[in-house]
Amino acid sequence: MRRPWCLLIILSIGFVGHETRHILPEVPDVLHPPVPDILLGQDNETVVLDGMDPEVSPGLFQGDMAMTNEIYNYWRVGLKWEVFPDKLWKNGVVPYAISPLYDPTDHVTIYKAIRTLNFMTCVRFVPWNGKAKDYLLIWPIKYPKGCWSFVGKYGGTQIVSLQPPDDSGPNCLGTEGRAIHELMHALGVFHEQSRWDRDKFVKIHTDNIVPRYKSNFDKQSLENTTYSFEYDYNSIMHYGRYYFSKAKGKPTITSKMAGVKQLGQRKAMSKGDCLKLNDLYGCLDNPKLKKKYYNICNFLGV
Ligand SMILES: [Zn+2]
Image (cartoon, rainbow, N blue to C red; front, side, top):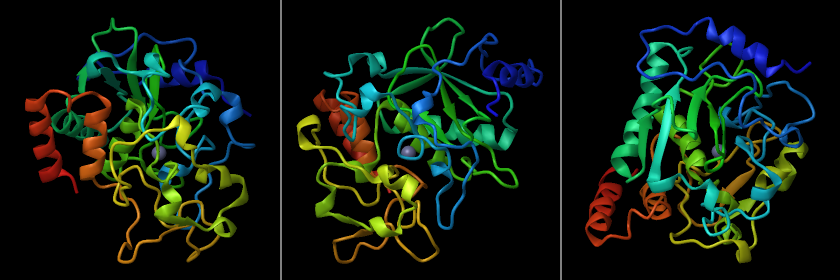
């Protein structure tokens, strides 16, 4: 049985304290945006398979992205603003609020992720002032459980789900990088291995993928996509070798390049992630800023 959103919110609001750092939203009757039903899996259970990264647990598009059909048809590694002007956070300003349900350690992890993005890019996450119509609400949503985000700005109160660790569920806050990964989706970035040209760089082992997750490994055609940077094996947005694997030791994605052993990571933005995000938000257009952010990405990107 699906739990009604309103019940979830009423239960949650009981924990709202006055000592929290940010202004919190009014209690909404309905969560916006809702996760479209067609994007959810057949069942509600949280599945954690061998070698699977926690972020892939919910039955959403490519594991952790809540998508609409509209976006699905026209996506690329970064959203194409000419096609989706409304998905862009105007001037790179992203108001956000963090749920008071997080304990202090988890709150700090989320806050560090935000601070890192603010430092390494010209995107500006700012505490929600209680008035801005569009903002991110970072909340440990119970259904669908897990770590997930919409891609780009959806409009209105937009959930980024980061589930704290518990006995059975995924831990979206084990590293600052997991929070950065979901926040990058919210800024409009897709998974690296979904690039149109990925078959030159990685091999997908379809037989090793749990059948119902095979579409998570789809890619996009060139006509809907453009790319400014090289394929990045080390991207924080790249799947790991065993994501959605049927069994231990059976990789679902491997490199075609000799010497590349590690695929993806969730520690920090790679140099490529950092540049990609800066490029997406026009931070590289001005020569002075371009120099600044190239330096930052090269020094701090992993
Ligand atoms: Zn993801």
